[in-house]
Image (cartoon, rainbow, N blue to C red; front, top):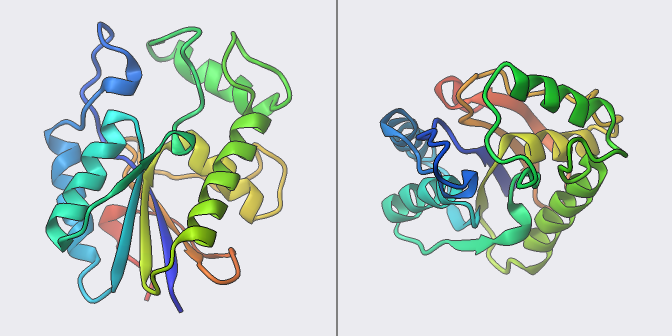
Length: 196
């Protein structure tokens, strides 16, 4: 059974002076991505895809380089659009995130609506599954919020009721059956590895 492995990028360099989309992985995030590639040993990875945001590209490049593949980028794999506010420091950021998930049909402070981001990420992953002509596993490096929205779709629950990644730095993944577009492994941190 071939799978799509959807990974949220791990820790980044937080730089309020730069657009969020240009933040790179920090040294911890890069080390965790290296660990993730180690987990892929024994799996046949035939394609790597990423959001076109820097942190996701950084993660995809680590995977692709180690397994000897190129990677493709896709704008529609990007995180929910938060450009209206730019960087918001915690704890205020987490309050806005809670509103984003609890009121999915509203634009919270000008952010992309959760329902629109969900439609976009589901279409993006569906398109990759439909168009990819390889027969092995696909790795997609993307983001936490859209990963949760994708999970809500796969679990057929309302936005905000889905299971969520638990590692505070990101670097969590789900596994989706390529043929049926169903969830076969719920969120796990890189350190937890794949379910046996």
